[in-house]
Amino acid sequence: MENIAPALLDWFYANRRILPFREDPTPYHVWLSEIMLQQTRVSAALPYYERFLAALPDIPALAGCEKEKLHKLWEGLGYYSRVRNLQKAAKIVCAQYGGQLPADYNALLALPGIGEYTAGAIASISFGLPVPAVDGNVLRVFARLYNDPRLVTDPQVKREFTARVMEHQPPAKAGDYNQALMELGALVCLPNGAPLCEQCPLGTLCRARAAGTALSLPQKTPPKARRITPVTVALVLNEGRVLLQQRPAKGLLAGLWQPVLWEDTTLTAAETAARLAALGLDCTGVHFTPLPAAKHIFHPHRVAPERLFPYCAGTARPRRLRLGRKGAAGGCVHPARCLQGLQKAAADQIAVIPRIDEISAFRIVIFCFSGYNSLIKMNSGSMNHRSPPEKECVL
Image (cartoon, rainbow, N blue to C red; front, side, top):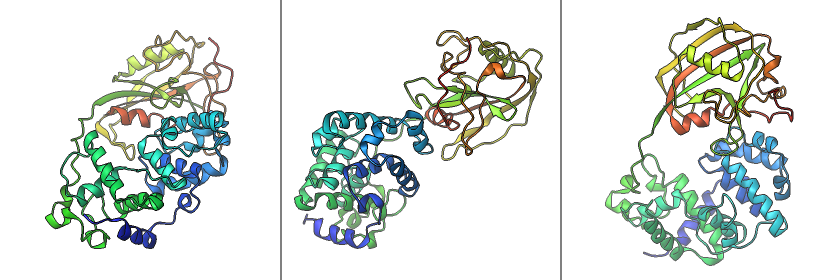
C-alpha cells in the first residue's frame, strides 16, 4: 500500500477541529486533555479542561492542590482514579524532573495513569518524537484500511497494527500524523453507524471499502455479561440537610461522599431501620409507608426500573452516635468514617448534616434498586461534594 501520510495530512490541515490543547500543545496541556478525553466526548470535556487549567495552570500547582479542590474541579467527569493518578504523576514530575514532563517516551510511560497511547500522544505532539499513539480510532482506521478481520483487542494483533501505523508515519511530522489518524477516526471513519467513506481522504486506498466490509470492522471481543447487583440507599434528611458517608480510601470513587447505602443487598424497611440503628439513629416507632414503584434513569447509565422500591419514613429521634470497628456497622461501607459530617456546602451544592448528634429529628427515604454493579457504584458517588472537617463525630 502506498504511504497514506501525504493525503491524510492534507485532509487534517484543512479539516481539523480548533481545540485549545492543539492551539497550545504544551506537554501539560496535551497530558491533561488526553486524560480527560478517556471515556469522555470532546464537547463534554472542554469546559472542564478550561476550568481545570484556570485553577491549576501548571504541574506544580496540580501537585500541590488540596484533594477536595481537585475532586471538585473533576466533579462530573467521573472515573476519579484519573485525577488521582494525575496528581500522583505530577508529584513525581516535580520531585524527579523539576516540574516539567520528561521528553522521553519510556519515562512518560513509567508515570502513574499514563499508558502507551497517552505517552505516545505527549511524546509525539508536544516533543515531536517519532513514536506511535494508537487508540481505538486508529485501530478502527487501520482495520478498515487493510480489511483486517482479526480482533484488535488481541495484544499481538495490536502490536502488528502499531507496526503498520509506524510504516506510514513521517518522522518529522509524527505529532500531526498521529492527530490526523485520531481525527479521521473521530470525524469520518466512525465507530457507530456507517463510515463517511465519500469524505475520506484514504477512500481510494481502503480495502474494506472496496470489499464492502467496513461496517463489520474492526472485530472486537464480545462484551462480558454485566452483573446485576442490588443496592439499598437511605436518604436521612433533617431540616433540608442530608446525611452522607465517605467511601473507603481505596477502590472505586475512593474517599468520595454518598448517601448511606448498602451494596449487594435489598433490605426491607425494618432491616434498613436496624442497620441505621447500628449507626446510631434510633428508628424505634417509625412507621414506613411504601410508595409506588418508580422509574429512574441514571444518565447515561441504566437502572432496572422494576427493581426500584421506595419507602418513606416518619420522624424519629437519634441516639448518641456509636460506631464500631471497620465493617461492624451492619454492612456499612466504612463505619469508622461514614458519619463524619461535612460543613455546609457551597451555594451550588447540597446542604449536609455536620454531626449526627446534632439532629433533633429526621426523615428517612429508602430506595432499593438493582443495576449494573460498576455503574451503580459510580452513580452512588454523584452526591459527593466536599471533604469533611477535621473533627470527627463523637464516638
